[in-house]
Amino acid sequence: MNWRKSLKGKVLAQEPLKKHTSFRIGGPARFFIEPSDIDDLRFLLVQAKRYKIPVTVIGAGTNILASDRGLKKIVLHLSARCFQKISRDGNRLICGSGVSLAKVVSSAREHGLSGLEFLAGIPGTLGGALAGNAGAWGREVGSRVKEITVMDHSGAIKTLERKQIKFAYRSSGLAKYVILEAVLKLCRGNRPRIRKKISAYLSARRNKQEYAFPNAGCVFRNPSAAGAAGALIDLCGLKGVSAGGAQISLRHANFIVNTGSASAANVLALMREAAKKVKERFGVDLQPEIKLWF
Picture (cartoon, rainbow, N blue to C red):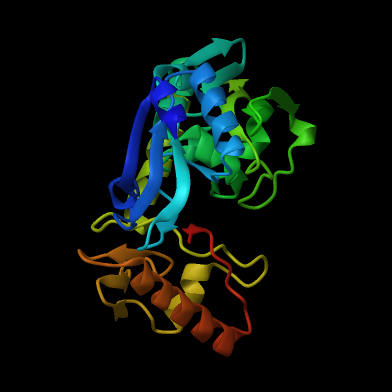
């Protein structure tokens, strides 16, 4: 494995994933690597393919449940400065995939550009949001994409137009790539009005969601025609139900929280229980919204 010595970025072996996920859960990754630049990333992907080591990308780790046993993979984190650039071109923002959503929203606000206010308060990076087509309040980030630049696992860079990307509810079809950069189409807006919208979204999020304990946000997708997953779980009387150190939130039933010593197995047990009860009572199949890394 001499190729690791040729990387300019940070390389950590057997790095605990619980240090990099908002759940604070997860065993060691075979390698946790932060490339220093595009060339470093390309070299890493080529070597990983050569040695047949699977690669998965992590952003801020805000929607991941990682195995207690860890992963026999390279976990790739795009934290270098070159992946966190933001610039403006008229009504467009050009953003690196490693930029936090908070910074994307604030940059749009500073430039007087509207269209991303609904993302206020959603944790994570732009790359993760694009990969999962993150959204809230009936809107999704994919609707604001003009194009996305990606690198495939052979190291080739390509730019995908919006029509080439299969955005759907919490999915994009981009998992086979490493997202590098996105061009977002916005519209000119009134700065005070933009600030007011952002404040309203942040306030609504604070009033409804769980912040007291580590968690990964909404655990299940909302069924298309059956109402909100959280409401269905709540109607089954499952708020406060625990398994080990994991608990279905008393504040929002679609959140599972780590009260201090939860394992991935504990969280999975609660997910199975919630899915079982909702299926029995409402005939609805709940599907995970969080990524299960096992």
